[in-house]
Amino acid sequence: MQPDAEDLENVFAAVEAFAERAEWPMKLVFQAKLILEEMALNVINYGGVEGDEPIGITLKTEDDTVTIEIRDAGQPFDPVKDAPTPDLSLELEERPIGGLGLYLVRTMVDEMHYRRHEGYNHITLITRRLA
Amino acid sequence: MDVTSQRTGGALIVSVEGRVDGANARKFQKAVESVIEDDDGAVILDMEHLSYISSAGLRSILLIAKGLQKRNSQFAVCSLQDAIGEVFRIVGFDKIVTIHSSQGEAVSAMGS
Image (tube, rainbow over all chains, first blue to last red):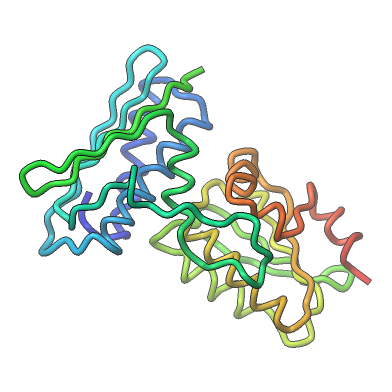
């Protein structure tokens, strides 16, 4: 994916094509798109990627397990440890306007792994909800 | 993403179709805010034809809701598809935004 939100459209089209071949249920297609958007936009908006180095995205599906791998050249950022948990109990007027994206991702995956290697963030997300 | 609007039973109904994501969420928010008039006391966002929303879109809805609350206008959403209803629940939006199952239900609850 190019480091530009406008490229989401191509990512979504690729996910849909992959999901059709793999016969994913609708809900999983929605979740895969959401996970990829949240992770990619986090890199684009906050990762400080220089130039136009693409964000690497890999989808794998095997039996009931879906694995999503994301590789980016942004600042070191460990979404497993560094992402804040939003306070969902606040009333409307007190709610801050950000911080929900990575929280959504965390609720939708069974495993999240982070590794920093040779200047890249490598994030692996695994979900076993292919029903 | 398309936004259309109509006024029924004292409420402004704004319908959104397609996808609200990180590429168009600001445009979506502006489109909704631009159809709201000062004397609209009740605004319903009809999401029947919304197929996808991400945190960027939720942020826009939160900002729209906050803006309406400041001017003491009512705000509700209706007709959420299953996956979107689940996203609303996960982030606790069901506690801060009124959700109706249909447009008719929303209008009769809010219209005057």
